[in-house]
Image (cartoon, rainbow, N blue to C red; front, side, top):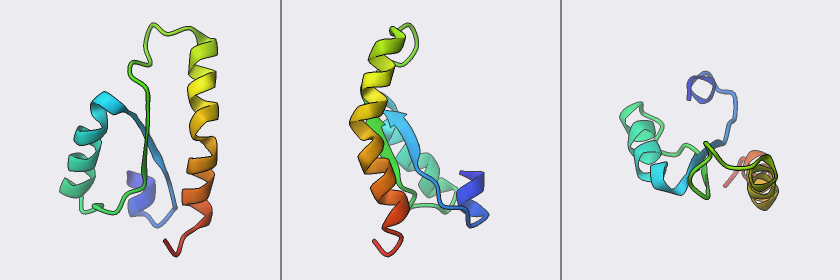
Length: 71
């Protein structure tokens, strides 16, 4: 969130369970429009292959949010 506040476009990746907290924290920090993408919860204790699958599932969304700066 510090990078976004400094004008460097970012996408925060949060698990679905923590999405509400991520949205609220961003709003509290004056970043209500922060781009946030949700992945399946949890991350800890999950096999690496599952994490890679989750990343693959959202990579296009993340790239889209970073490249569509007008939206």
